[in-house]
Image (cartoon, rainbow, N blue to C red; front, side, top):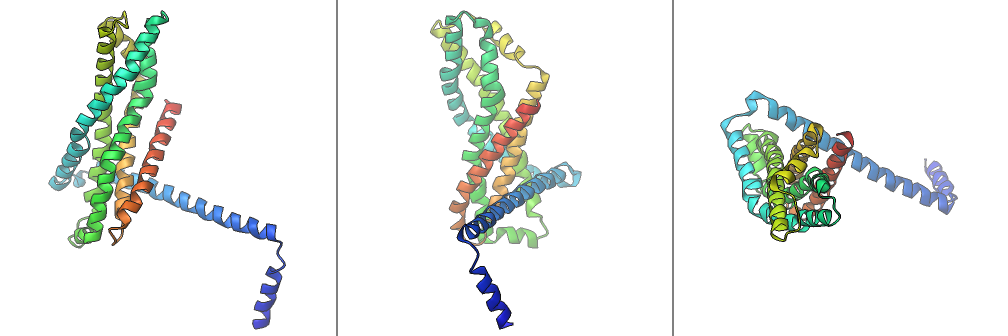
Length: 282
């Protein structure tokens, strides 16, 4: 046995150095690919699981309903002030500029089309999702992570309550409804601010009715459906990703700040992937 081991070791010593480096690189790349694929499969299964739980009638007990309402209030209603400020700034910086330069170029009839394609279809859903990630996503990770550290999650399990049902479903639904609602509010405030600012500066010759007709008529029904899918699906996935990272905290409170950057990157990547995929399809 010792002779066989020594023969194997002696043979491995004759492996050329470039081949060793290639084997090491292959192993590192393989481990990274397996880790990423496992993460994607875990996220996909969680999205499907929480989706199945959400449509079951037995899920909607008073405790779950109250948790969904609280999450919508925190993620949506309490974020309106910040979203309004951001929408005003975007309206002054984007819509006003589009109206001004289109009028200057004699192309005012295309101002609504430009604004809709740039902001309504792409930018508004992304900004609303980013607000959810930065404001509510970190809070979800910290809250569930603190529950893991304090043993509250294990207490729920010992009481016969499914933590995924009680913690995951409300945050996924709250995220989806909040991003959709914040997107609509941001579009309304941005358009109104931009048009009023352009009118005050005499930067456009369009009436309010003409501008709104251009904006509403620039997209067809499929495009508006795409905006709805982007917002709801992004919020749904963001809520699930943040919940999973909270569960992964373990028993140490020091893991919470370590998980936040990773959670932010995964949520951001998922948001851009969903937005790009929906844009390509619809």
